[in-house]
Length: 119
Image 1 (cartoon, rainbow, N blue to C red):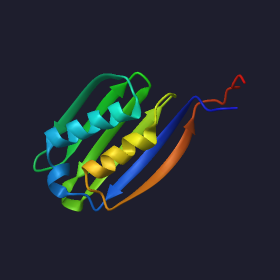
Image 2: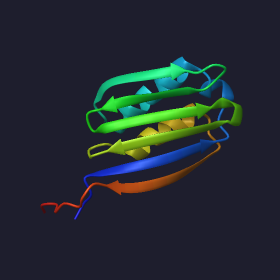
Image 3: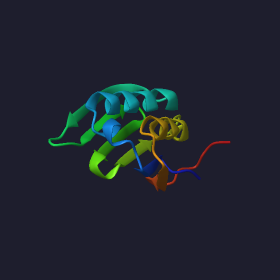
Image 4: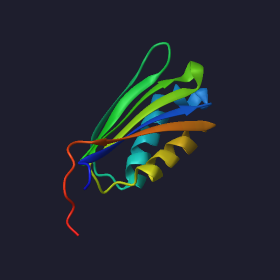
């Protein structure tokens, strides 16, 4: 039996504030994370808040990768959902390095009704 999708909720702490406040750097890091995970990028949208912080999402054929940053706290919340064929660990390692995060915590959820997997 297998779930329809896997959802990772990740908190990066101790991040470089200047990176988390930079719209272009956050956007580039998220797109690169999607690429290295093997996801198929459909579109993306990011927004810089005043005085600081970035929110955005990369829509992938396999679902989505979203973020909200709090540079003043060195904190980023990332939401990565996939219905398969994506190496989420690779993508998240890319983000951790890009943000120079000192630590991360993860919550993993299986989403959707369980289905029988053919051998």
